[in-house]
Length: 92
Image 1 (cartoon, rainbow, N blue to C red):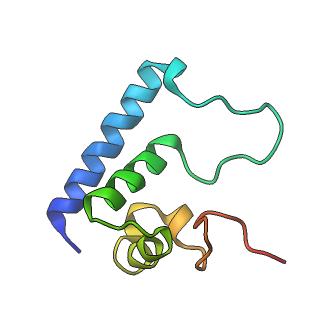
Image 2 (tube, rainbow, N blue to C red; image 1 turned 120 degrees about the vertical axis):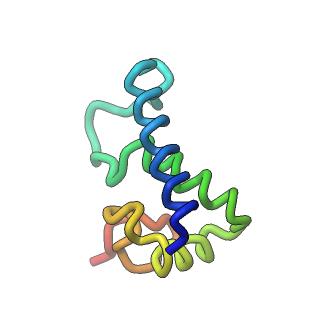
């Protein structure tokens, strides 16, 4: 666990969440019906920034790394088995 990276992730998440609450018109539009997102917009942005900062260009490789080393940052998304989307519901 890298304390500096965790601190950055926490600060980024908190700031992003605050900004999205302060400027709700910047949030993505979501349909009124359908599946609810499995993680918040702030979580998604934080994970995407970490992926870019750590140099992962492959989503599958990033998800494998994140599940092994960054699971504590987003339990909802990173706890599922490997899928191409990472946060998709398991197939039945």
